[in-house]
Length: 417
Image (cartoon, rainbow, N blue to C red; front, side, top):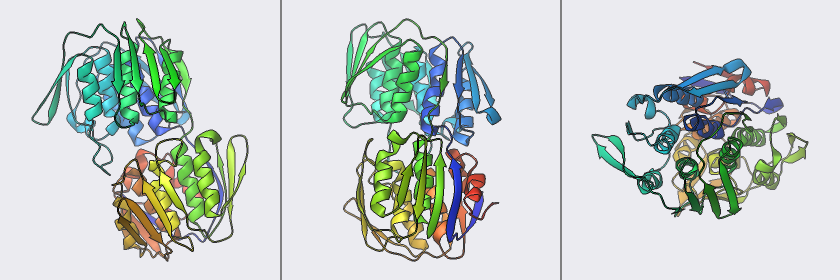
């Protein structure tokens, strides 16, 4: 798929933010952990959600998705695991299927998860946790064979050497239905992890945040069904907020957001010199003056999110002074730099820092290496002189619902081919 996008001298309009992609994917896998009906509201209609629904059907979950109502019904039938390698490789969140099946003490065969390949992101922490809870995992011919061994009847402690959203959630999965207690040290407590904890506790799990460095899980015999509202997508919100900052002039309203999740993004935008007015569940951004260069550390929540680093890099090319970004989460998340350089952007990476000089961007043909790089390319197209073509644009639809419609509402001329 290709996208053509023309320079937009000014942006004006409003965008309504969809449900959180990353929270939805983790929450959908919770359907494996209960025999009862799970009903989800505010589910975004994006390709990653459709793909995970397909994988859940491959393990025996009935999934009914009402796209227009953003409502999903999930109910486990008898687990019959027929995971297709081609499907598993299309989405990184397929590792949540692994964790949920381990929680249910199932033997199964799968392969390594796919998804955005913007950095080396092994699933070693996940596999180590699965082995610790009593599984033998053998890799053969690019497949992973999971075979349950005798379960551990003692309380367990897990320590994550590096914070990981996925590993934290998978350890929670494999701990909620045991007859013992589990402690997770140095977990990720990103909003998406908190959504999973809130849902599981609503399903009668016993999960407690003891402090910012510890999660305690007391196992229960079974989990109940429930109805749950997915939170709004803070990364989608931040993407459109940053797009508004990049334009020469803008008056943009972002609706259906939860402001506490966006505090560091809001602060960063203020540092850039853009005016922000806050409402109860909306923001109004107004840009009339040139941007100022910034220095910003990207780190785990509540710091500026790594999923917005690539987009922020493009925005900083429009500042009148130099900017320096350091991504402590994924320092090798750099695929967008080549695309910015193609458009005449003056960016470089040196000693784990990204240096961005003021740049006049010009239209060219870009390649969306991954989801967030893809939106960064859209921002390039919106500010570059001429008409920009973005190749491999289907990856952007993995995480942005109604992309064309939302951009057009802001006054951007965009065409999909």
